[in-house]
Length: 523
View (tube, rainbow, N blue to C red):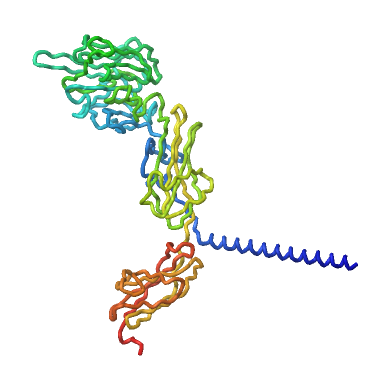
């Protein structure tokens, strides 16, 4: 019986202790939750919108991407992979994208003197192409002194390239025409560069262009038949290093000849020379669409490896990127996540990266370190006065599709600024002023700054022994500033700073004033 009684008493004691432990644990958890809740009250959820209705004002740089007009979701201006080549390279002599209603040379070397082409949305490159109806000479260009066709003399290496979608490709339809004369003291020779259709093939003719070549007229005809209503890229190129004159369709060689004295590789090269300046005519007799017309000072062998877009892809397969400016938020701002509005076709992608810090002036390409993030997922450890976003735009493997980014919503928590004291008084003394104020009603307040100066609202004081304005007085509600000049008036205000981060300073209290005087000296 005694043993049973002892066992019962022991069990009750253990039960009571476990019960007490459970209660203590619950109290600790409750206290922890209360603390977290209190801290959460100090933070204000905020959202910063990039793109969308706000536009892309915070963008620092775009590389291989561009902002389209109302091309994104909900009619927003979206960022997408760029197809524009034009003045992206100093070797570009002429570039006509036909993406805009007004046709102009994006390289800035040619002016349009006459244009009878019609803009159309059916583009193989970019957002538009041009329709030629075979009347009124199409498009006429006049080159300046920097243009290959804007002056007389040696021409050097060149590449002429354009996309065609012919309606019929009838005999005699001319896509490009340049006609002039090469004069010397005795003779005058007719010169011509012509690209026209013959028996459903595009044929290039160079007449009296290459000085010293054994034939005055050179013909390069395509091997494959041109298919009506189908886009194809036509390229003719001359390499002054090798003498190779070559015609290609969609990057495949159709015809070639070495412009040398003996007509073979490694012979003495005959260089091109242009005579009297003349206009360049595009689509003077052609019926169909044309897109992405450009002339380069590089031969095709170098041009195809250049940073400009070549090949049959619509977008650069290496993709593009955007970088925002370092964006100012507030001290101790915590980035929670980003949400995006974007369209991502199959096999394409947009990858996002973020970094942050309190001082952006020492930032470079690799510091602070970039962190990859995913839209809609929680972000941890990204906080500070500044943050910066970086995004990579990746097309499909064929370079035929681009992702589009219409908006980025950056969600972050900002520590709230504590409220100032509601009541403040100033009592003058001999070379001093004593300030008293009430505690801030804001639980977020961790201390106070005292501002002072000699003009209302201008707290630039530097004479007090306690320090220059503002003076950090800690978490108290009274201070006496000494070292002040008797007879001068002083104005004061007090602000509270955050207990979470002392750099977060609230607004100022009402202003008070006092005038120290020697008659107020204590006896």
